[in-house]
Length: 337
Image (cartoon, rainbow, N blue to C red):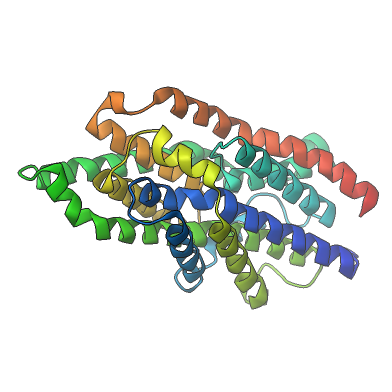
């Protein structure tokens, strides 16, 4: 492929913007992994963010870079991408994350990034944009599949637990799950770090490919990119997004130590499977599906369906909204970068 001529300051600026998005991802989506343990009182908010941030970074040593490869070369054709496209994609995703964080809407940072990348690419190419439909189609399909998987796993775990502890009172059963809830939240935080940090790694990798600094071979990806991305998302999680904790931890359905453990573990299993398969799914979608599944398994009326419906609307809007904002920033970048 033909490499682009890009100044060092432009390259540095784009990497900083990418890391800012990664930080905002942790700030915005970190609530997903800690909402259940905060809502049930297993940990204080301060303890919870330290706990989640640690496991976000620890994911560096657990998962391969399969998700980064999908983002870096499985969404749009890298040969077509330039630094203006990447600038537009990052700014579109970052702007949408800030908007949804402000209003306390747990939307998907993952899909905001994908939507931004596609939107900026379309702005450059028009209707003939070189979208890799196999990869993009997989991402779109998992908007539906990932929350459904979380729903079924979370619901089945809740039913299984209810059967196993059928002869014990809720208070007695809850004693078994206080430590189990921490294990589930740790597993989910690992999945969050492993799946979401790799999306920013993929974007920076794509940027380095277009600048001729790296190739599609993962061995050419500098390790400082990997460490800085995991560090940024962990730091964002540490600072926390408390507006979204309230929605995830109590507005969808009421959680206790048992149901919170089942929801966290259901989300963790779904997220771990997707990360190992190299599928960039939404951590927001998986944990929301698991929470709704747990609530439904107890009582369909226990789920606040109006809140859930509003979340679904936000999910549907994320890719086109981030794409539109990214297209606007592509024009800005074209004029000033």
